Amino acid sequence: MELQDPRIERLESSLSSQFADNNVDFVPDPMVLRAAELFILGKAGRTVALPDSDPEDAWTIIDRNLDGVLAFFHVFMTRDRIPLIDYEYTFPDFGIGELLDDAAAYIHPDLENYEFIAQEAARRVARFDLDLLDPRLLRDVANELGLSGYEWFPAEAQYQDLPTEQRVAATFVTGGIIFGGYAQAAGVDHLLQSKRSRLFAQLAVAETDRSLWAYEREEELFAKLRRSADDDQGFDTHDYTLPPSVLTMLMFDRDPPTSPAELFEKTRELRESDLGAAYRQWHTELRGAWARGEPHDEADAVVEQVAVELERRFGRTPTGPLSGVNLEAHDAPAAAPGPSTRLRNWFVERVRLRGHRKLLLRMSLPQVTLEELTGRLRHIWETS
Image (cartoon, rainbow, N blue to C red; front, side, top):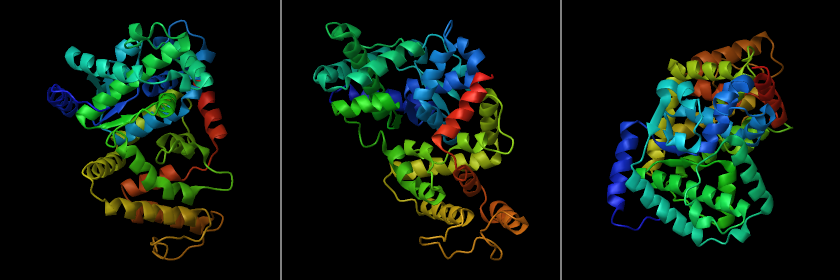
């Protein structure tokens, strides 16, 4: 959002300091956090966040926001801390802070800053033609917010003359603009929930170049891996434009987790390992270079190395500038995994591709459809 006001200097100073002090470099949509929270708590534990809720309703929120769940696990692996920005005002009942433990950062913009951004956001929404919004999307948004326990409706009084579903959507868009304002003022990324993003698109709500910069660059960087790892059926989860997923890697491991809580703990263990720390540091350096508008040649080289290895693993002739690079000690066939292939793969992962390269390869290897992933996630959620 464009903030043209003398108070902008104070706003930027206050928010950038608060974010820096808490080691936070992005603003997540609260609906992304909510979907992940309901998933990790499991069917039995969901009542911590949604007392007296129907389990089918809770799963509906997770299922419709699976991209948010994937995004949450991604940022948990690649960011030092996850900010909960006045989360208790959006969802009075919640358990995500306890789940995240010391990875949670509680951010509370002061009232003056909040009111300034909220007033600007409401003025912008008042200029939009809400009749442009798809009625089905309006119904979906209203339904999801109701089922999720969402209780933050900024500037609601301003929209009281609108039809119910347009009123809900107007407050939802207002909230997204407010969080976008926080991101802009603090100079960090803004991670939008998919439906809020669709509302933004239909209303032509412009985000700043900076606020979505890292996610656009990640999509561009990791597109090569999706092409290299894609089989005939396709890896539909990558349609969410996320980098290779730790969630998918762990769910299709030889010893997969049997509950969402175990999945989250395995992710935490990997996150806190030397391998996870190297991967997170690599992402941090990437984002820093992108924020400064600088190229990161090492990142391109890493992705190219992993892409070549993926093409070898899936029995295709490697292409690209590093296609002739021999990652192994000696040539080995890329046929069905026999002893020599397994030895070659072990050598590549343990010797040639170390640190973040190794983890990036492992995250890129699972070849599953969205239906398979959803089925496994629902099974462990239902039985937890």
